[in-house]
Length: 212
Image (cartoon, rainbow, N blue to C red; front, side):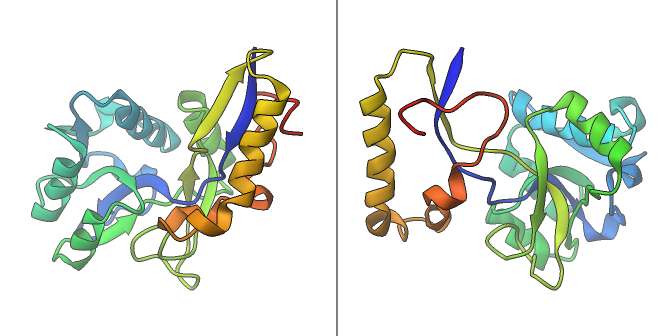
């Protein structure tokens, strides 16, 4: 059995990124479009597969375009050789896509679409609902122009039950809490590393006794 020692809450959008020229708004619009497949990256390709499932689609319904890496797939969006790819909202290269003639659209996963979410989570159960409503959650997103999409908890620190002494887990969390003023400005997501923001039950494992 596993026990949670520390985890953050999602802070960035994780969804499909499409060119504005493609006209894609939701996964249902991806049928017949050119979709990036990233060599040697099963995690990213699983995400793409789950979003296709949201739209009740499979790879048989799209035109697969192979790329050697994640950044290369974004270059494919910029130069117009692909219509949609995996997207981490905060990847700086998406600023280039947003400013390019192709334009950037974050593919929405509407929360009201229960059937779509059910199909997606059957493929990638680690994903959860996330609304991007600020620029540090996704390129080009604002409070006036939010996007309903997905994200996931990362990082996650776990231990085998009984493997970590209670006092060690306690002092680990204590250090994260007390040293927060020293590291919160070191990177944009670190400002969210507060106990209040991070430690909310996730449901897939109990907290370590030293944490609670």
